[in-house]
Image 1 (cartoon, rainbow, N blue to C red):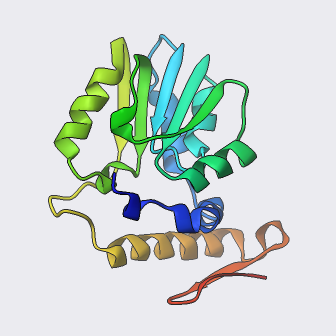
Image 2: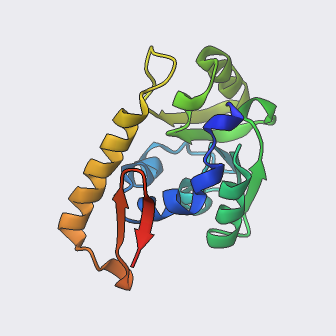
Length: 181
């Protein structure tokens, strides 16, 4: 993954947006787990949302992300005794895992074929893999497409939950970043 595509500069904002939206991956993950549940890895873990889900089912979870600020945020907000958060590139990870997962990460990698081969090498015999992403034949999805999807989810969740959830409201205007009130 290229360093310039990391979420270093907006880790807290990205995590706050995730607080306001549904996470269907977190609901789906427990339904696809293998029977053997010793070791799992979350590739591109971000702030650790899915690592926490895996920690409920596995003895040990390694959660890696290229972004140092995301890893620090995960350690601060989602620390568990059986989760190890590591700042690393996917291709630098080694080991054998009963379960390998990655959500919304693979569209950032430069060579998808190489990364998929590497992911396959991480899966232990009898293990499983769950990958969820928006991979496109184009080199990367246009930013407007990604932002548009997130804004639609945000409005849908605001309509359902209301603006004042948890005593705070957040808003986004193009070019201004997040505002918190």
